[in-house]
Image 1 (cartoon, rainbow, N blue to C red):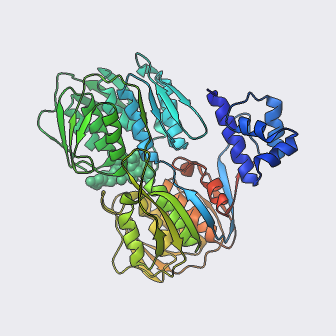
Image 2: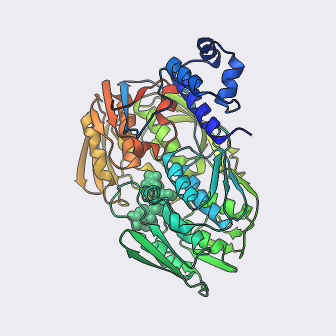
Image 3: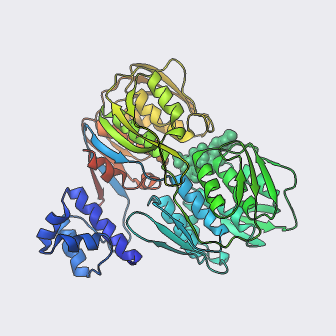
Length: 509
Ligand SMILES: CC(=O)N[C@H]1[C@@H](OP(=O)(O)OP(=O)(O)OC[C@H]2O[C@@H](n3ccc(=O)[nH]c3=O)[C@H](O)[C@@H]2O)O[C@H](CO)[C@@H](O)[C@@H]1O
Ligand SMILES: C=C(OP(=O)(O)O)C(=O)O
């Protein structure tokens, strides 16, 4: 079994080589070694000296190892670009983070397959490690092994990592069964305006959890004698609140009914995972979930979360803004149907393959091939709804799509206080986005995009939308401080480059 650090170094070398457009044989020739040696190095199957790392870095013109604290990363984009070829959608950030939290329910070893190697996952792994959980990447495919300690050390939680994620809030559900009293740092994440935690606290109170917010911490006290009894009715059909309630119910020795539950993709993946843990969940995919909990879970479990509908939507938007034909493989179609229906109404044409099943054995996937299509604005406004509506995280992509369409499109982002405001940054690239109020933008297309330098807004999806518009923009664009993109996308720049984009990653010297 290769060591995790060798796999990581191998992965970095493979990425840098692909970025250069070299084959393994070409790299081997420059290093005066064999193609099979390069193959072993990239798979983490060969011990590698520092000198070799330095030689490879030099050959690939890539800083594989940096000393000291690295500054923010930026992207330089040359446009306009036409994309071509195929790209496969990675597994979802939001199922990934829910499943990482859910591993805290299990005293046994959990293996998660093809987890997206994104910063949000990295931060949660740091938090888990700080509690004494052993985590290990098994290979370059993103298979991840998680082994909990006999007792979690909640006093040593990595605050800095925790505060950079929103998902740490989902530790509450599993932890309330493992400690009578504990503290969690306030959840952070994207700056989308105030995001409430009240629905989480209301739901978890039914399991005896009382939380006081003091000086940057949630101070939690658990009364284990409290049982949910009658059905838990969520005050919002939110995704993470549903997941928190599900995880609390999983270790509750009895049957818990959750009403007004989200039936979104990450919730479904969590339910399938809970079933693998031996927790029966009835009503998966509906808004009433009945959970048959177990007082103790100690199993060896292997699970493969499904593909990310938001990444699939991002890639559709990339094809549309660059007027390109690409094939997007492994699209979780059941979570993208409304988006595609709206796009069709706007004139978008595409081919879709027969359906096939994701590695979780449940989610239906297709391959989509985009066609260059003249678009027009839809007659009605575009607005998101909890699943099965148009996904809340997909709404921002309609800004860049609307900018390509003839006419005026109204987007109504009722969900987040700040997010629509960031879409006006597209104006710096030539778009005509008018902010009508903090939640509504009117976008007039088509657009003649031209390059500009923009600092990433502190929100994942709007930041990606700007990057996609840069692909279509004439000349050089610079997108500064892209951590926020790396929070939710693995190697996005390199993968777009594989489709023909020209994006260079750099740091301030
Ligand atoms: C880790 C994770 O899975 N994150 C997702 C999850 O975050 P999460 O579940 O944390 O979303 P929030 O609880 O912040 O909900 C998003 C916003 O929608 C509002 N709201 C939500 C449901 C509802 O029925 N009524 C209502 O008003 C909330 O008050 C909030 O302002 O769901 C969001 C909404 O799909 C997505 O943007 C996030 O990507
Ligand atoms: C808002 C998002 O994520 P998070 O809940 O992790 O902040 C998102 O994925 O767009």
